[in-house]
Length: 294
Image (cartoon, rainbow, N blue to C red):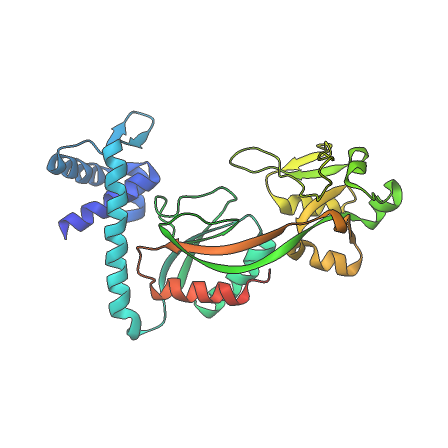
């Protein structure tokens, strides 16, 4: 049990990069945290952290040890969950990561919290590609092709992408009939947060035609901002249909160049393949699969 306690302390220090913060979260003093880490290092004969007056970082050995420790704690949690599964409703802390699409995600989380009040949600809204296992997530929701063999995935659904602008913008500036005409328009572009590259607008063009050089009127790493600006008559934006469904139905936005567009976005929920799907994780996967309105 002392070893398990030390492992829990080590993982908390590795995640917070702070003896003081780890102690606060665990309800012990920072000196007790430091002594526990020192005992582990003495027992293993390696340094787990590089320490300076301003920062704490994992050594190569520490990073390897962290991966194993997370598995150990995950197995312990899974064993406890299996034993208590029949005793009551799902409970405990669930750490998840989702895209920065609060309009899509929050109604689902709101409903889930109402149905499972004993499950605590720790959510990271981010469009970056998190490392589910290394960063200790129970599950993540992401788009695109999923190739990580360490993970299990379930398809949540797909939607198309449309190029939209407001009625007022189109009346003032005209409706383009070919992608090449967009060089004379305001374009609201999405930038991938990790690479910094602009998302390509997926036009179907003849082999002899090149993609138009789109004006970078406004660039953002989250698409909800682009939807807002399109509604404020600021230009064209490429957006998933779930984000603009109501605006298209009401006539606030109009789609253009539909015959030139050819792309769908698929959403997935992913979780570690090596981890027992605890009751809280199972009900979350099932709930999201049923209620996410893509």
